Image (cartoon, rainbow, N blue to C red):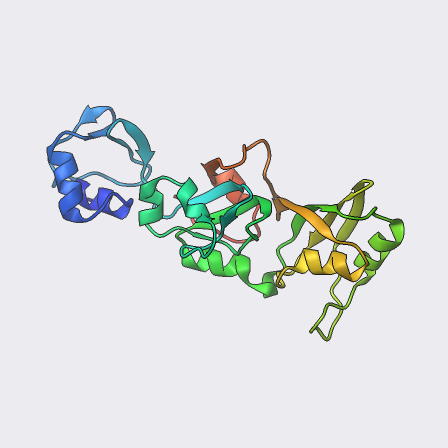
Length: 237
């Protein structure tokens, strides 16, 4: 692949913009400055740098973000900044989008990608991808509430009860809740249905993938072993 086309595919601008970056000496490949826009490279796994910032060619990108409170999971936010503002410009330019949405006041694990089928599969209710949340509640958590959540509760405007895969007490005002559906405000509505109220909500796990020690607002690439923990077949970069 020509270097200018390679940069364009990675979100560094139009071919004209990428050509200018190369010609001014801003691009290096394998640690060597390359000022020839038409020079050919095998793209798979290629290491390069733009303005000294290292990158690796990825046909598709898969990202894990620790979403902080006060950000909207939308490219066109209404009242707060978009979570895309937390990512480098080239990743945004290549069209990464969140896999589903967390409310602006909900924190924790959020996946993003520019792989449309991957996003669709994770958001599809038919795949039943389990998601684990830590909910902080207004009132004390009781064993009766947990039993009701596991047995199933009927949400407003729903005709069938929804059940938690698991519900466990973490503290007097905290519970772990695992669900495999994606209904609107589902965790908050389920907790309300058993007579309590969610004050804070944090997503810790999706499928077999955990947030880990990633700091709020930080992100990282998902590599092969990470993707293997998600119940969806993803091609290797």
